Image (tube, rainbow, N blue to C red; front, side):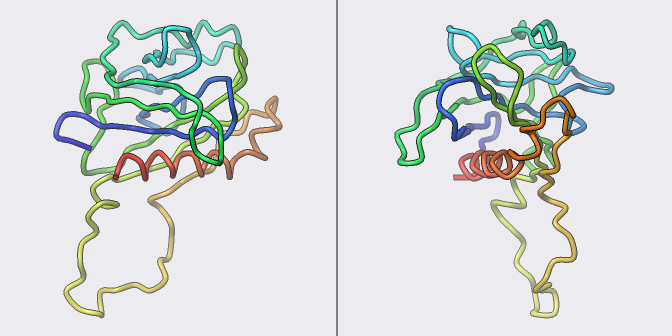
Length: 190
């Protein structure tokens, strides 16, 4: 995470297919108001990872179209060289771009992610809420009285998916999706 850019790395444990990650105003694929959501998708087109506008959930792909502004740098989508296998999507993206949801360096970001088989609907999807600065540099308590040994809630991470009843695999893949999101968040912070 820099002053103007974010470097990301998403590990998809499945080989082949496509992997997507995006920044959302509401934690959902589609915007309710404000800028159109977009996602960085690797494995969707032969030209390599690109930004796509997300305008509908149409199964024919008409709601996932290449963005007019292709500003990614250092983008790649490759087989993982780890023992785990799978695919790795890497990219550098500007924090603020016209017509896109801004990425906050200090404040809550809603990250959406999914993956699927080639030319198919996603088999895994979810979202996570992240404050990059809070995760990188947590404030130090001034006294031991300020330390809460057991947090009451886990508001910073929300991996409850929006489950499509037509996608029964989504429920079974929530843990894997949450793991992928955490891998992305960890990679961004390193």
